[in-house]
Image (cartoon, rainbow, N blue to C red):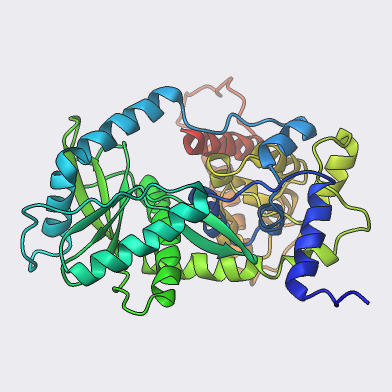
Length: 401
């Protein structure tokens, strides 16, 4: 008599059925995990990422491929800048860590750079854990260049590769994130800094799992070092970024991934996301999972164009941005907003409805009031729906850039 299946085994089998027969799972990286934290309310992304579905191939099967990824020029520029930051045994990088995060420690005259090479991701992760333990016991500045760390995601290990991890003389561990976008006058693009913070928070969580397994582990610091080019040069500068908020959000989202079985149980029988299926079958399978689309998805998810099309077809106000959606309260569609603004529906006591009606009155007064002797403009004013679509296009284009 075979032993009963555990919940973890049953979950992995269920997720394998969703991927399709003989379809290997796509490993999650730090960018994908950070994107989960950026949109925690999307059941569709949580299920697909938890099941290891290749969303790029799925988008092609749906007929909505996305131009998602980094340009070759940006990739080469980033590699060149990272090599400069880590030159001479990471002397400049260690100096920045000392200056920005640990000025009270002894200056790093010369740091240790252990060899982290090993066979396979499991071997590299084990070698990284050993190097972290040795560096903590040594009590000296140590630079781990591209270490390999593992993070448990829905019962399976996800192998992640930070740009660098620095061990301080007091045994503390700091994540270093190196980006090629500039830092102008000491500040950088907030959206890009936020994305880097979410990505670094994933590495912090993985280091905390390593520290929990070691007897004498150092403290994983929640302030990471973001290294960027200074102004318009190729010289490195850095800033300390506190990632405690991003770490908490990512932790909650990873915990939510362990409950993707509940999302999968609500799907119709036989639901499968194999890219070999016909487009109509894939569309039905994808639409059976609720999604929460926002213009920010265009810069973080391969299914963004597909979800945007359905969001616009349904007239959902989330396609115009999360901030606008929050201000509209219970008005979830463009038709609801128009009806409330024109006095055809909605509770007048609702602050959102009252604000919409007042805005409609002011717009009508502005269109009808003309200076004496002026002639009516021949330019046709766009409707609210047209303006909404144009606003979404602008926001989506900004997110893609």
